[in-house]
Length: 254
Image (tube, rainbow, N blue to C red):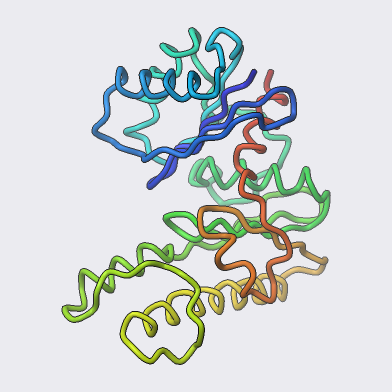
């Protein structure tokens, strides 16, 4: 089995692959205060919950946008499965030309998403990732990573309203019934959900206007299934796009 780990700012997503099949998946908090031993024990507990023998996990791969957590999780994985995982970074063979001015600036998760999306469609594609930040990653019809855009995530915006506006409450991010809210909570939910859908559709339309080839749009990330049905531009949702990209990169670097 392959252990694939995507370390994000808010959550860490873990996948266990049997060949090309995602056999098990887990989502845990990206807690910077945890020690190697705590993460190792947590991994072993998760494996046990699914009756997975750690000895059956023959390799691992990690993508991380949280440098302080990378070494901790790598060491924890080494303790849990008995060998160190590959870390996606400079030197990783992606099979995808990176057209960014400084390729080292691109987050590992963005490259992993781009690789997985192009492998799926073999055409121009925009990946919208609803994570701590909302990112837009653009891949050409030739399979080149062209760049993209980064916006504050919807949860960050909701938290900012709560912290910085004295009379606004902390709210649950759910789909409101109407764009015209009749109370404060409904008004905030309308602004956040429908406002972010407008942001996504506006960005996708601008990106499409800057290229000369058709572009498929796929969404991933924790809030993708909430927001995608409201969007006129998102065509597919894949909750495990990043994990699948990690599997593909593992195959290309094995």
